[in-house]
Length: 193
Image (cartoon, rainbow, N blue to C red; front, side, top):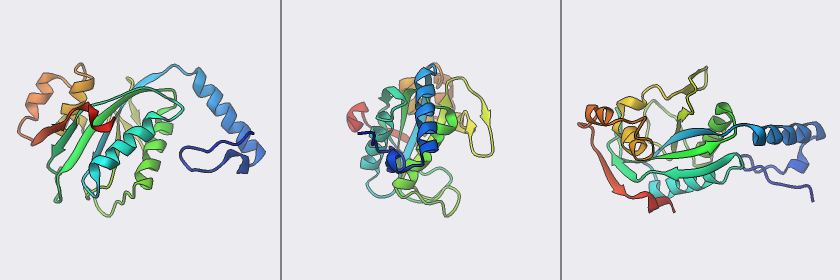
C-alpha cells in the first residue's frame, strides 16, 4: 500500500513530500549496499524502571532496518560516575550496522528522548543513556559526535560489559586499571531476551 512507519519519528512516509520520500528510498537503498560495520553502544540508566528501559532500548536498536547480529552483555550495577544518585544499571550492545555513525547516533538520541532523558546538568541521573562507544575502527571528532567515546577506557561500567563482547578491545590490563571502581555483574545476557 506504499505506507510504512518511520521507526524513529513514527511519521508515515506517505505524509512526506514526494521529494522527501524519494530521498528516503534512495538513502535506504544506499544503506543496503554499504558494508556492515561493527558498532558498540554503551547503555545505562538509574531512574525509573532501569532494567526494563534498557531491555526496551536493546530491542528497539536490534530491530532497526540497518542492524544485524545484535548481541548484548550481562547487566552490571555501578555507582554513579562523578555524581550523586541511585546506582546505575549498565550493559553494552554490539551490532553490525549499515547506517553511518551520525545516523546511528541519531537513533540513539531519539531513543533517549523517547525514554524521557533530560540533561539538567552534567552527570545528572538518567532514565536512559546511550553512548556510541565504537563504530568499527573509525575515529570521528565533530561538534556532536566523538568516536571512540573519549572516556570509555577509564570506566569499569564500560570495560567489564565490553570485555564480554570484545575482549580484544577491553583488555585484561584495562580491567585491572579500573578494578577499584564498583561494578558488579547482576544478570547474564538473558536479561534483555
